[in-house]
Structures are given as structure tokens and as C-alpha cells.
Length: 355
Image 1: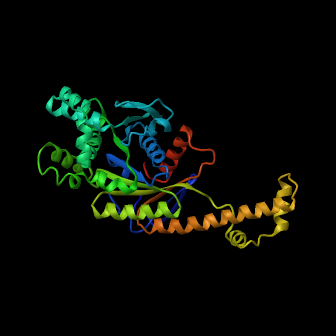
Image 2 (image 1 turned 90 degrees about the horizontal axis):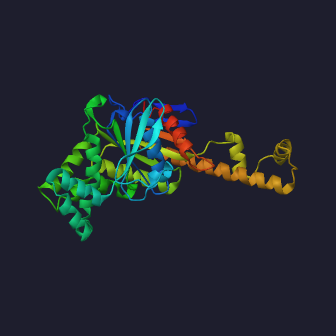
Image 3 (image 1 turned 135 degrees about the vertical axis):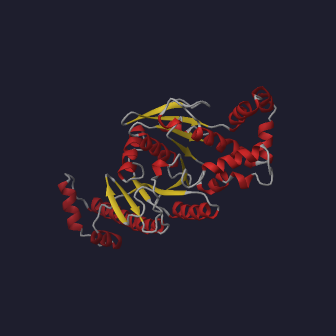
């Protein structure tokens, strides 16, 4: 990890990075890895963070592929582009001449491509698809679908291109992966197909995927909010990924709030003991009439904010205890747009998630 092994907290532009003393200190940073997998509980903003990470990695002239596998076209929505076909399309430029391409991976199309690439059987594959054989096979053996999806990701990671520096089509691939609750099964494809195929092309494909998922080549990053359920799912996700031996990256905290009150003020606000005259004076300075109702409303808002900050402080401690690098991006009141993705990318770079 970049900077892993540096103890303490580093404050950066509108963001904060925390690295515990127990973090792995590796010779290469996460930006040197070929595959970045982004997961998280639904609603935490994992697609947003995957997009920001892709732009951050592309900054400085790199070519990055951003992929999704859930058929929801969220990358297209994120970058405000038409729906993605099963074809790599440029969706963003990054500072310094970098490029972000995107691909929505479809299991049926991945199977057709696989049959054509290795067996010259694309026409036969289309026939199978028309009669629903692909859906039948993946329903009977769900692990097969994951092998097809991850196999396409693996192909993009390893794809040669003699015209580019390094000889590869992309400098790195970012995968907007399934949610935390399914991520270990999705990635651990060898175990998923173990009962189905001891040998043969499916097993070989699964094994080749696992070869990419080595710690020096890949990292799984978890996105969370500073709320009880997302944090607990992150804790469980780290434990499960560790149990099955998949490579852990960092934890990205999304929608973090900055405290607006000093510690003493926060304590008073939570107890409902803020000085009402000071609140009234502040309201008057803002050009408003400090009515009793307005003072009461401001005191209530302050108490709610103080309670929220206290909760986030406790949840942040839970995340720090995981011993992984932690990166934060703030809550955006007006919602996320393309400009937000670029700001988040700058924050991730400032916190040394990428370099």
C-alpha cells in the first residue's frame, strides 16, 4: 500500500486518510496493482467510488478500464453517457492526458466471446443463447456465470497491446463489483466451480482468474458509510475476504461529515445546554429575527449534528480497528455529478490511495 506502515492520520484536501501501524508495508503501492475491485453494501456509493478511483488512476497519462457486472448501467449514469454496449467505450479524460474507458460485462456476451476466442464456436454459442441454454446452465450452476464475468475482467487485465508502453492494453482495470455480502463467492470462482468441474475449460478459466487475484496484482477495496449497518458489513466483509485468502486493499469512507462544533459545544448541544442568547446573537448576525421558535430549531439542529458526529466517531474507530488503510470523501449536499467524480479522484490522490 502506498504509505502503508506510516502510523497516524494525514489530513489532506477535504479528505482524511488514516493508516494504522498494523497496515501491510509493501514495496509497491496499490496503484501498481493491475486490478482494483470495489465493493460495499448497497447504497454506500461503491459505483461512485469505483469511478473516482478510475479517474484517479488515469491521472498523469494512464489508460484505465472501468467495468461493471451487475447489468444496471450505473457507470453510464455516473458519467452521464448513453447506456454502455458490450464494447469498451471512453467515458472520461483525466488530468495529464489519461483516459478512462468503460465496459458493462454481460455473461451471455462473455460466453460467446469465450467460445469464439478459444473454440471458434461463436455461431454455436449464439444458437445456445437463443434457446436459453446459457441461462439454464448458470441457473443450475451459478458459479459458471461468475466465471464468465470474472473471466472477461481477467482478459482485460492481461490483454496485450504492443503499441503501448508496458505492452498491455490498460495500465489497470477497476471493477465495480457485486455488494459485500456476495463478493467472496463472486471472486472465489475456483471454490464455486469445484463441485462442477475438476478439470476442463471451465476449471482452467477459474484457475486463470484466481492467478490474477494475487496480492501483488489485485486489491479488494470496501466502501462504507459511517453508519452501524454499513460498518458492520464492512467488518464482516474484511473477515470473509481474509478467510478465503482474497487480497485486501483499503476502506473508503463515503459521505463523511466534518464536525461544525467544537468538542465542548458538541457536548453541550447533546445535553440541550447550548447558550440560547449566543444562538440568538448568531441568528441576528445572519440577518434574521431570533424568534424563540428559530432559536429552538437551531438548538435542535445542533443537537442532531452533535449526535451524528458522535456516532460517526464511534464507527470510525471500528473501521480503524480493521488495520487497513482508510480514505475519506465528504458528504456532497447537492448530489453527485461528473464534477464530483473528479473532485473525489483528487481527494483519493491527495490521501495517497494512488500516486
